[in-house]
Image (cartoon, rainbow, N blue to C red; front, side, top):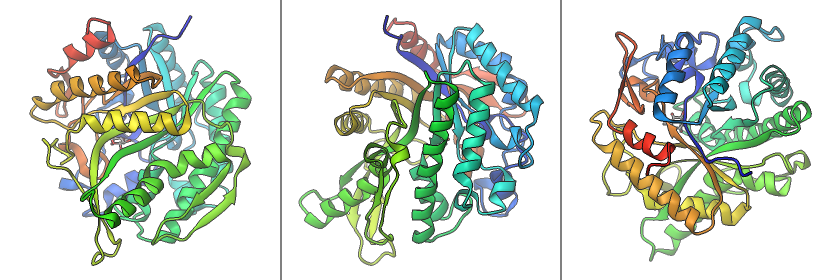
Length: 415
Ligand code: FCB
């Protein structure tokens, strides 16, 4: 029998758990000016202490799946020493999910690195793939009831925000390091995938790619079209292309070129994880350092400033399928919306766009809403509310937003 469609929500450890004091983000948050409003992750949504309650929220939503991340710095706070109590927390979480009929999907690396690793170069440490694979093997062994695995969340976003724009750790702006970080993440993914599969031969493994719908600002301008194609190649496709060909090739103006064999990547993914938020209009901008400008379109905006653009969701779903012929899992989609007016409409339009792609033949296996709860939105802090459940951070109470009902209707087959 075919597996049922996965209707889930997604979170990341550092954004919801609270108290993740042993990673690079925690340290970054202490530096003045890094996070909007001077926010710090702090207690976050206190999910670490509220797993049972939050699994109840999933049940109330009718969800049959949940994507979460294992915080590496919790289970290995000091290099080479596992914290058994922290592992047991995740073992217990997986057991609670399964008991509630919720399929767990575990992400191994969702932006945060243990401080001990960051101290010796983070992704650029020469042994990053090895230590990451060791963590992956341990996770697969301890969480052996988990079948769905995401090795790395949004390696393209880490490359751009961490190493080009310098607004995420390690906050450098250096195209040479950006390319090295891209290669390192691919090597790490490959090693982690091998490690997980060795323990769990039935594992379904993927990367979660942040795909944006990139369009030339002026389609009649051939240079805008050219830089749009280059941007899409680097941002949207370079990582999964490397997996497909077992070869890492990066060739973008302004970045050093790379062309190296990586046969270990062949077969390292079973699905294409797709995170979609918005489109960008791309133009040639010769007077800027990057020479390329990315702008939001002029449609309605979310609190992130992102344009609500469901047509782009259908476009990237179709493009990913045409390019790789891998089943797709929507590993994230959602909006920041303090008003609570935009979320229900945006959810409806994006589900309709996904269904249009499915009707056109794209095999989509699941849809994970970002996010279950309001949470620490990285450099944007707490002002950006992505939750289906609104969190009152003073009391840690969760309140359903207007979109919960619609999500439940989809998840239970009523809509
Ligand atoms: C994605 C991240 C996720 C969250 C959403 C809004 O890029 O994967 O952690 O911050 O954006």
